[in-house]
View 1: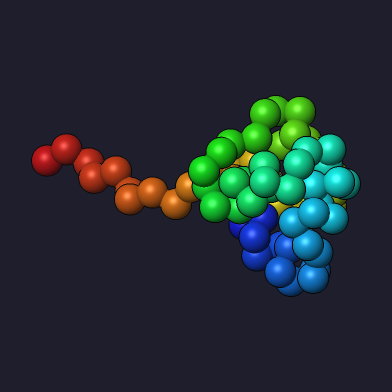
View 2: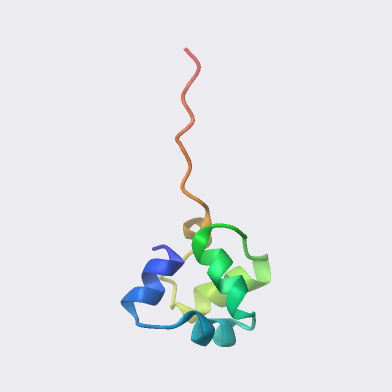
Length: 70
């Protein structure tokens, strides 16, 4: 589950979540937009804070699938 989807589903503000994981609100906004990738420490905090709903792979930006060479 994407972080933005989790926060919306649980009605948690960026600032509330930022406080819970120990970063600033702008950092959480960047995580939700895919503009920044969390450190391993923060990834663990996100995993714990979301009770396993947002996993490290969920934090990766959506990208075009790589086509196999023909």
